[in-house]
Length: 387
Image (tube, rainbow, N blue to C red; front, side, top):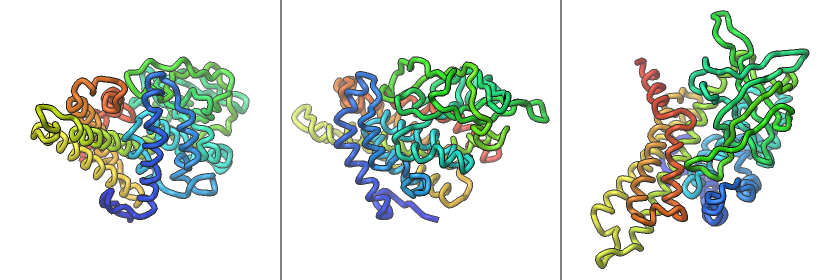
């Protein structure tokens, strides 16, 4: 088992990756983040840069076009990107853990050969179609259906809040659908790969969101969408169970992103508190400000320790569901709390969208909602405790 003790004690390969992504975040992502946020445009040039660095292929084997790394490497990259731009970070997170990972985990060899090289290269991205207007954590509420007709799945229904689903480089959406009923009369949920150019599949106009303005998010409709029978991903009827595994992994990735947000807020506040003067001295010399930033640092450090622990358990093959839920909850709350406190430290400037802390304040709330709300994490943790 590989043990990740702290960011100051990373194995060389992870530290080199961290420095490379940190440099990219500072010099490529940060300068255009405010523009894409203001104009609500997808940052194609930044995504192309991440693709060139191999970030979309980090956890995949070289035989499928990946970098031969692991999930922790992805998390290291997400933390660094999360410090400066959540939209960019979640584009990578969703593209890998939700778009490509289901195919890697559950796909046939033919499906892997067909889709993974282009997804791992970052030239194309994938999406994960689970949530509906009345269904997400509650699989029983799924209304999208897929019926097998003459060797094709015919899909009808809709999805909500799907990341990476409507870009010019979107390759596919893997959608959950009801394909029958089981022996207990419950809905049988399966997952089916739907190429983005399939007739009847439509990414509706994007949402007007509070934050994550440069992240691509759409409602989707499926109107008699027909795909080959071979597009079934994994065993029929195991779709929801398989995606629960994907979501457990994804929570570690989101935790890493949220940790980056929490740390990014600290870094911005330390810099500002040294530069900004009031009453003849830097505001950081005031104990009220210094202690506030100290608490922010403690939150970020706690969040990092939580996701490191969850990642280590996952990579060692040990049960990690509870650790992933703890990491996701602790880190998302740290991000939200630190963004609020950072806005306070910056005062009036913290309310101006041109400042990073203002964007973090708007962006961070979704971290407590997406990939399982805080309440879902509490439910998972309590269940793992036998309650």
